[in-house]
Length: 282
Image (cartoon, rainbow, N blue to C red; front, side, top):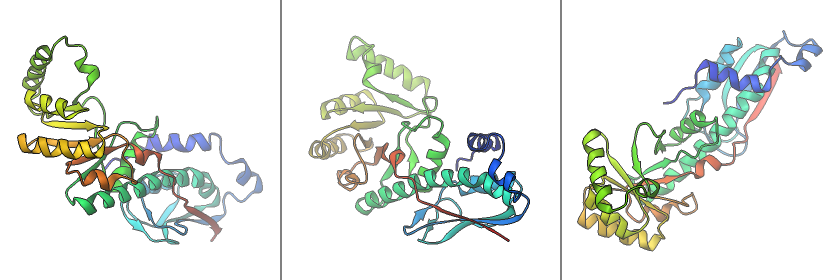
């Protein structure tokens, strides 16, 4: 599971509290003893980044009284993180921790719903997310997806080979591209070759060229179902991915086409969770 470094956690806090908490300090309550709790409201929540929240509290001297691990389904109106320490430090970390848990929890809960809907149709299907994360939020977003039962389709360009049209366009003929693809396979024997196809015809051509995985892009459901049946019959060992325009609203329909994996960006646009925070004197 992905973990944020202490430096990254400090940067999150520095955005909100660059020079200390003027209000709490001015009121003279900063050294009083206090308790801070984070809880769900009227809806359940799949928790995520609670480990980072605990560490952020610890960096500022708060002692943890209890927390629920990432990936846990938290019932409505339930405390899932509580700590105690100086009131000034409770106020200092309050909003940064809440924002982190809200953002990650929203993605995790959405992903969990998508996975459940897809696996109701196909228990073995994999739900993955794309590289289309909001800038500077990638670690948090990917951990949240994992907390919800999903996986990252590609963490970046460095660890996988995925060939798009914008790669193929540099080759004047299919023969030239096929020759280059063979070189790629020989140079990277431990890697699977993924190719994006927009039609059945492209899928069959790329399978013939030696693609290990076909990413079937934005195919209408009926055409996708037909493509899966045809490709399965002719290339039974090839892995098939559906991608493009998939969300919780239609993920079950895509799962019913028989693909092995669904790739979506929709969890990154999930509504943040609405977490209740309470600070009180001890």
